[in-house]
Length: 320
Image (cartoon, rainbow, N blue to C red):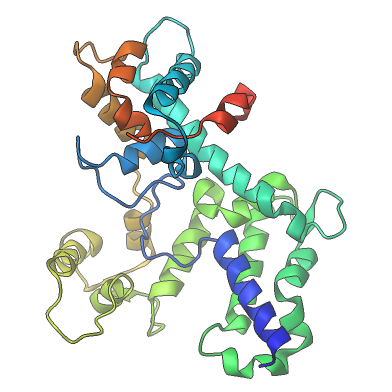
């Protein structure tokens, strides 16, 4: 592979990784951009910060002093208090968290839109996407013979086309903004759930039998390279597979069992996070938060090093 081909190949890898979350080690679909780290109450607030602020804002903690951070947090609290009664309820906090999470999804689409809308008609056709992503490969397939071990383009392209057509609700093979958002972030759209489940099966099912057995389930999250004993968490995951993933106890997961695993219907992450924040900060135990209670426990919401709320505060409220 020559230098120009290598450069294009690396660019394609970056594009695919940035655009479509098809390869995941964490398969359970939480709300967008929440940390994989579990809650560690009163110790590590990374999950809380990312839920409350969004991941990008939560990574800039060192830009403000504690005093500046608390002042800006107070302004955000005013915006969360939708009925302006001076109290933040679980529902208001849940709505804010969902807005922050949804904002990340649409901002991600906005960042890459111009890369694919080649004719600038404010739509992205399948042909435009295919050309932007696979054009060089399609024109020069002979140059990618050595890359087959890393990427199987022949499998990736029809998989993308299948997902694109599922997102294209009016069937015109030209995605408007919402349709393209469903294409890049299918986990956010109910009509894309079948694609999410199917792609997960295809990712993990290494022997191609249409099911995921225990070893495939484990190998998706753990590479046993040193030949030593499995870590405790892997043994726990094996128990999880037999006790909770393999519902019909046939030793493998089918599509419905995979759906039950990655798209749990009985747990609302935004609601759970909102309840957690209220519980940890509600000093008078009235199940609501005042601005004073939030500012008193500001570390949980924004971190001891603070964060940059400038962009967030200058937005039109309707954008959040």
